[in-house]
Length: 456
Image 1 (tube, rainbow, N blue to C red):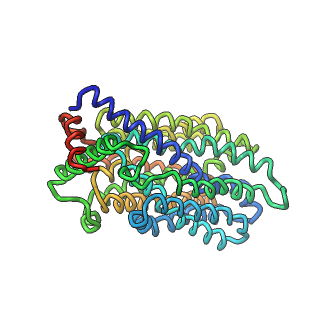
Image 2: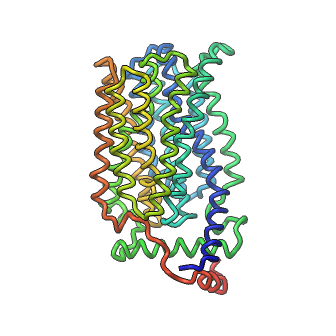
Image 3: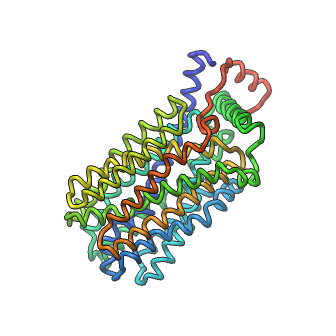
């Protein structure tokens, strides 16, 4: 184990990387996520203006994930070929243009096509960032780092929900456009501008980071190599680096199934929350935005706590199973108490606390199981199959709403899928998914010897 001085130095290096990368990536993903889910707020007025049924809305909201599913894996492989900096910028420009183009929608077919293309454009961004972070952080630091990055999921709603409500409330009729049309335009502009900042600001990997010293680069490279070797040992010495081995790895497909079950619950409630709040008796757009943000405040707190606690305990499975159960209970109770805004919101807050808490801990697992090209492809595969559930969740909820007049039965179904995550996660052996700490060794000697060999 490194001496206390060396450990402080190592922590300082990762602190420096975190401060450089995470806030900027959070800003980028904030607008990506906002452009993805603002359709939930646009629905409050877009649906009436265009005479769309709940089934049409649910299908259109969900078809985004079909495009996402089909192009996520190719996108991550293209990022490996062209480099993260260029590919992330390309993704951001594409989704900004397509999101703004939603103002031209007049028919269900146009709605479906643009939502599908938006999924194609954004495919690869989130798994690409997850893979990008594996190039900078070893597995024993991954959950807390991903926790900080994925904090943008609740933050985008905490900030974006009141913002979306305010745009809807104040922009109706400006320059002859409806408020929902302004919503798409205003929230797409930052993504377009940030794409050009990405080209100047991001580095492709540790070696190309001019803001790190040679010694700091070796510290990170040493940790990443240790992580890779320990991953090989955990997998019985078989290098999980090739695409062929990745596709044959049953645990990768199990991870995808778990993420699929989780996302059916998560995206179902995510896209329908503004409408559920409105149906409980709240009519003011800005007030709906404020209430829609509240569950994500609780979710953000528990997300950070759970990911840090998971790293400290070097344990993953229980830190995924318990939040999944809490989320399922909260969703079920929110449906049972749908007649009361206060109680419905109370249980939605509980549901989001559990649901969001497990995300960063779960997302760290593919990078722990795989390495090399397989890591990029595996992260994309798990995320794309899992996000395919984003099509079924909103679509099923919309169909049930049209046929029963209520979202309650749909919420019970979403809760059941979320609950399924708990037993499934224990099919993964702890030795494979729990992070592996750096072995006892004099870190300073390794750094010095690497510098002498000219490894950087």
